[in-house]
Image (cartoon, rainbow over all chains, first blue to last red; front, side, top):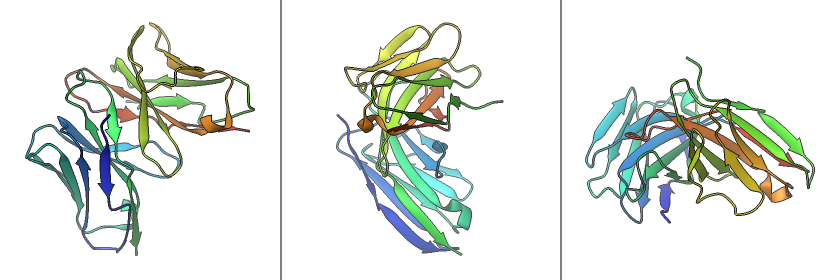
Length: 114
Length: 114
């Protein structure tokens, strides 16, 4: 099956710094999604990407769908304490019918020091 | 506009008992997905259902686990004769249609098997 490698595993930054994390896949995806999960809660959808090369922003968040369709990155600018959490990438396998399962990365734990 | 609802939020069972986890999708969503998350790991797909149909159960263990999404009422994930290894957070997600794969997650049910 599909595997996603997400890096880094964890990041410790100062408030105000920019953050970048990425995911790579062993094969192509046709959809990339980025989620944030707070402790004890479910993942919250941040950004969805549908086209290779697509660059999408949501406030201080920017994500891109890699041209090869095998990777994606998420940037967070001017981090604030409430950005703390675990960020997951997720992809949909093009071999599957639309609306089926997502494959998740292992997550990036972000800590922001005030 | 209520989000995905799951109950119970926490469930404690002894080995050999049955666990029933419920999920009500977002209003207007007819596609439901179940994922399992072990501590310090990403989410792993289990099953994808539409009303009265199991579309993809390739991530479900072959024994003891079953899922349904009846015409009326919530989706149910049922685990029979639970074992300690079943302890995990179980998340339900829903999506509105098959064209896009934006899955919205509930808060999860944390199952602890004693």
